[in-house]
Image (cartoon, rainbow, N blue to C red; front, side, top):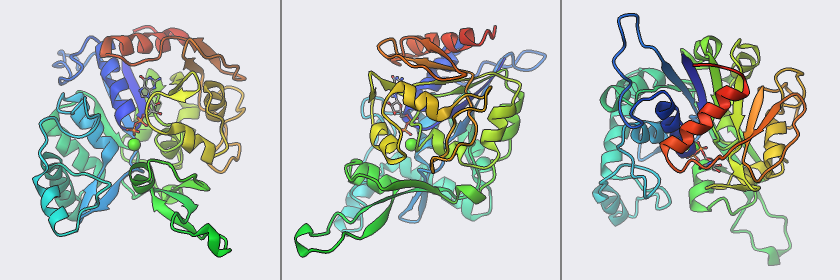
Length: 352
Ligand code: GDP
Ligand code: CA
């Protein structure tokens, strides 16, 4: 069976561990050797790249790296990001020059990944080819496709945090890179808008549209609906592929009891005028069948993407045209997450 997953970084990677467990694979190992007729099952992930950032001349792709490291067992699961057994010599030296971006720590092992990636990009290879090359070392089992080879960067417009309210002027509006807003300001500055800059002229990376069209089922991971899934959907062609694929499309809520399990999805949702409830997220994704709902970040109706939507047992939701299924949605370990995957297949009557 062919499973296609639309995903962000840490949350999405955790979900992909469960997809591998569902297929009976080692969650942190490579895919099993293919039989004489080719692989029985394949998993392809369409990964958000709008978090990407260039720092110290290095191209950093946090969501792709979270997937690479997590799915190969190299991630530091306690810290929640980066490599296990990481050291911080280079960061310490940069700080010695006052040249660190203190809000974005780069470990030594991680830096090697960014060096290889940047060297290949500078030599002219597209990000999709670079990602495939990096995966040759990590063997994540899942084919990881960047959503696009084109540069897309989420920017967050906020009021200037250094503005002095006593001086009687209106605060200036400034645009921050998503990472600066998320990490440095811990999403604490309330955003006026969140925009994936460059998405409107980006094209899907090679393989993305085919993976969606040829899948037996498409799963929308319980990733951030705005800055992970939303940015993937903002690449022209991807939403249309989800709306027209013969495969059913099933999403999952990243909110449990109206709160993100981790991170600041609520602040992102507020910026695009969507309530922090499973129902509001489901309606924002919208129904594929009726074409109802489904809104872009500007709030314009663009047609929905869902056949079914899983929400947590403590939540309730009515989403016109979408089958809503209550299920345990805490990804405590790959087996619990595999049970979520099974519920997704059941919801749309797909049999393995
Ligand atoms: P990021 O790119 O590293 O921020 O990760 P993603 O966008 O892929 O995932 C972040 C989202 O995953 C957050 O909004 C969390 O609420 C959600 N999330 C994390 N763990 C869980 C979980 O166990 N269950 C559910 N349903 N959502 C989760
Ligand atoms: Ca991310």
